[in-house]
Length: 254
Image (cartoon, rainbow, N blue to C red):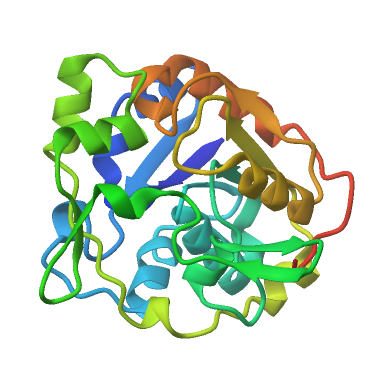
């Protein structure tokens, strides 16, 4: 199989460096991409179109899409654009768009006893961020980033990752509603992996995403960053995930 690996916010293709050789050891190919504004494309100003093109431009027939965290939006939109090329979509502690809502809303909206509730900082990330005059967001300290993303990584790994984080810029993807009608209609094979000690994606949100995907979640131990702390285990779970099937239909809304 061929895996297309898509990072989440603040990260880049570098975060998959330990997973790619583990997938190769299992007999599979993998390619990791940088979304504009991140990694080696950090100087680019991202748009919804350029973020989508970064993924779609590398797709080949039969690819397995893997989106981590905010990368769930990118793989969903890519699967919507070219469902004919996608064998399976894996959501690794990832977000799932809510039809007709913005990306931030998809990570903060939950149904409650008194109707829909929404919070701007459902993950608790804001306390760790430094907000620039231009609106860019960056982790203010190594300790904050480690606590949020890398708490089960050794010191050297956590520092290596922190030094590669890029500021996050919310442009049009923060205000324009997302619509992926072909994705909902295609009912592609899909799976969700929950990180058991995740401090970045609240349990209510991971449960909500898995439920909306219509899948029984798979679980990996550790933090939000299993690609760094347990890459061999993650590679094996990604391969296993492709063999699983949904148990219910997709839910475009909450």
